[in-house]
Length: 213
Image 1: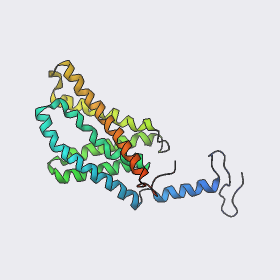
Image 2: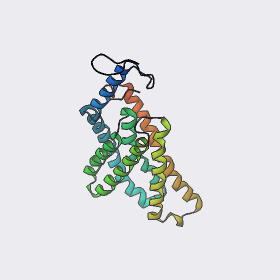
Image 3: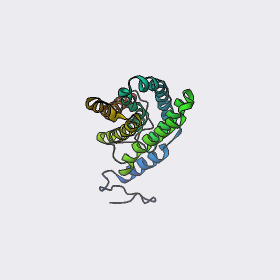
Image 4: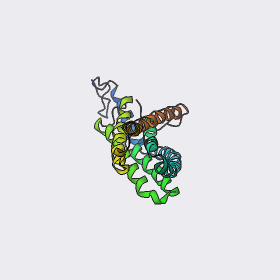
């Protein structure tokens, strides 16, 4: 291994699988693009779109919880949508948390009486989505990692709402359907979010913002 004249950058470091100057340039590019204006605008666009959807579902949830509480869990997955789209598209630190919080701000603009619910849910889910990738120091973006937050979060929310609705009073079959929706809805919306991110990437939305794989 030799160094580039006058700068001390390795020309070729096989430990990292790439020439030294090329890896150095890639690192600089990553740092300069982290949370750049373009990245933040992308997060904002995703957050606004998801926030409008969640605001509409917030009003629908009142009707569902009052008439068919069994189906309430089918709606929880929408809150995982903005974060997984942002992470799948950009593959950068903090984008899930930022996008979730922006989505919550849009949602509460249409339903201010639900401000605590919007912000609290967005914060918890955003932190959960970030935590999985923090463990791997944002160096791994394997497909299976995206599905850990919806599994853990969905079951946690299901148990929380279970106690609120006193679901034990229902028949066993009803209880199984109820908890299954909290498990399947986040997974389903995560799958949808991954598909949306893939379509946006093909359209060139992430060009100039996405980290090099």
